[in-house]
Length: 311
Image (cartoon, rainbow, N blue to C red; front, side, top):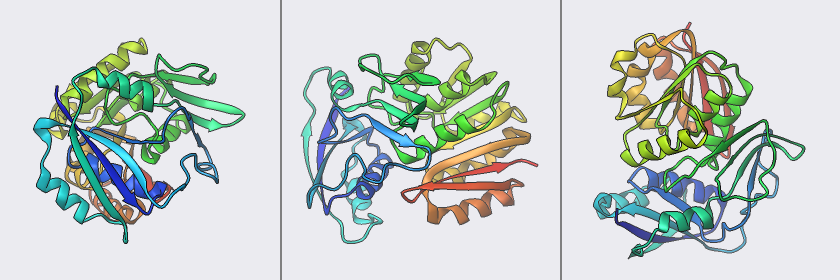
């Protein structure tokens, strides 16, 4: 599979800018996003928020990031439109593009850029997400082994980290779980590790499906089913799930909620993330129109995570 490598430069620099840029690029087909200084530094997601001094704090007026996209999926006009509509003001973004080297650069990317994620506190690691090549990984209540292979979903993004925390906080023992837009399937894997009876993980990207199957086998789990497709694959699952996890983006959630709700049992919950705090009101209106009841909202760095119940 051939990829293009892009180097994006943002002025000014900042973690908020990098988070928004990664989300914007994901929506136009990019499959990974890494800070060029993001080497050899595990990141800790504290339960009460990230450290006051972020690990990748502003160090310069500009920042550089590398991002990758399959050659056949690249749409120059779509990229230009996405950058022109960048939601943060006064940010300049420039990029250079080259063909990725003809080598096993997935392996290179994993070893050089993907670092372990620790959910919890410095004194108590509740969950660690790490790959097989990582050394000195902290002991935790739950350990998720993954080989990300260019799929989104290593847990480092605020939305995924918040979803992991919800799964650690809430009861899932004996549940039937749906993980929509599963990526690497770390959310389904944690649900299974915490006692979920069965999980269905769904993604429209064949690469994510293959990577999910690899990660599930790596964690020696046999109760996660992976499906290739979108919300259209949910028709056979009416009244099936006790919990739905949907970490996607606002527009897909708004479009697909009418297909999610019929699969949720009464008393079941749905977690949604992948959007900004200013999108919560619109999503809440749509969910309540479908009969869901709002439970609560969490946020981190303007990224929201909301919970509903089906009464």
